[in-house]
Image (cartoon, rainbow, N blue to C red; front, side, top):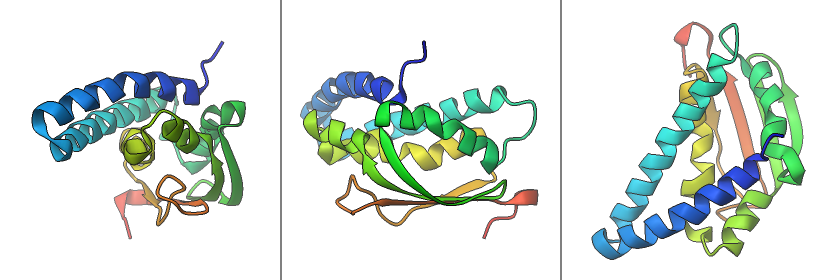
Length: 158
């Protein structure tokens, strides 16, 4: 049985909450946010590499779209797909239970470090030619998250 991604994030957040509190006490909030942000970023890159290693070819955005059910499992995300293809994937998240969960855990103020910032970093490990542009998130108070992924063939990025 596959553990839903939201449950993995809940477990991680329960541990990181205590680490964050100790870091704040010892080094201040700014340093605590930096350490947690860096650790989660490294985790996201490593996770991207793990998923890349399961592919028998260089993954594109269609392959990435095929992974999205892992993050949506158990109704964790409600999404409106705008465009889907090998070089472009665009969607809006209209409900994010990850955000709701972090707020319930008292971690809403660092939820972006625990979850949102993972999204672009995952690309680094999965396929560095992938680029995420996002201008707003539910975590930061927007009505939706606007995910716009591009795959730049030949290493070119716009």
